[in-house]
Length: 490
Image (cartoon, rainbow, N blue to C red; front, top):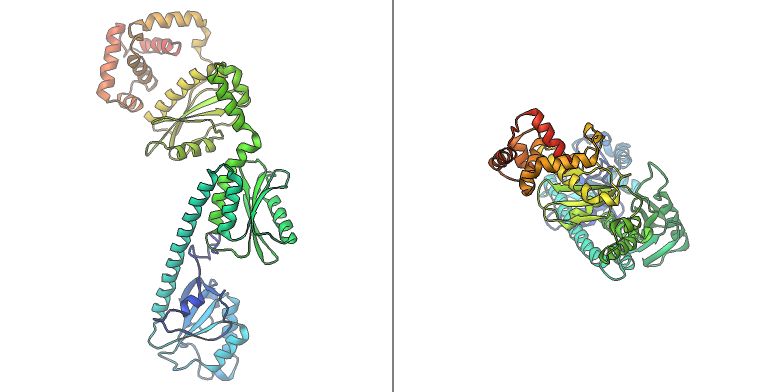
């Protein structure tokens, strides 16, 4: 299978040499070297160099018309040296054209290929090298399409398995079936929790368990996946979740293109399933929800969700309306499964010790840290931070939680002053929120319009209405300061 981490390996499945020989339009014929069905070609390359070694990456079908061959080559070591260099460079096979230089393949070349076990293919006069190269790429495209179809079907079957009443065994069974081997779920203590598929030898099972230990969380730099081979069986291990200690092990008699992708999909599904099982938080959240519905105050059930304080995050995608998959992915990226998907905004309740960071494709507003009793206020803070982030085209905006001069005024006196000052517009939330947003954006009509999702003329009209009802000049810096003070105490 091509290794995407290796720049010398093309991102397409290799072509079996036997498939190329089966093309009737090419009329190729293997005349020397092993007839192994496992021999594959990664690409075709034409060269008339006497020593092609420096120009090969490995895995090539090297095509030559023998232009470089001297007249006395058959009587010396020329062909033996030539083939040895191709083998040393990792060449997969040699194709020799019968035109325009030679009307037959030199016998010394046939003998050298047999000696070095390099497949030698005779290319007839009517077949061009470009035609052979085109056939290789056509077979690669067909293999790639088949691989994508196989991976897609596997993804669908794994997703269906994850939705069954016994999701973990179902996913393991489906994975084992798709790779033609065995799939094992290892727990945090390295014990087998569940398995499915073909039984394997004791030595293979022990090697797979050791490989799972390699991906078990042990600090920075721990790999998330690892591969090995034992007794001719291909092994792979994948870490599950964020430090939960679970691992997925896969043992298969052969490694097919797409197996890594299929196993990675299964690992993601099992991460979600085992994450809930390991921590018990799924049951705790369910209990918290039931208690809330039965009338228990939020502060009394918050302990079931984990230690506080908490941050409220409001997020809006930059491109289109959020969907459940995108919302779940955002929650996972922020480190919290407590996600609420609304029509245009996703809300996430995040433990304060998990500092939110900007997420590609999202605009985020983050509240100040809050205890459960302050969640409603934090929700408002996050909404305003998101509006400001959108207005200023900033990926993430945090609500300021520093102590300011306004906090030096007793809260009851500040609240009473705010109620009196803002009484003329208090009955119209649209006016209050527009004034608050407009002041927070330094009087920018356009940014306020973006933040509130209204037309800029609507903002002008509302601010003019506020000025009239409050009987004040909103362009006066002192007035703006006083209004801002009042709005923050509202």
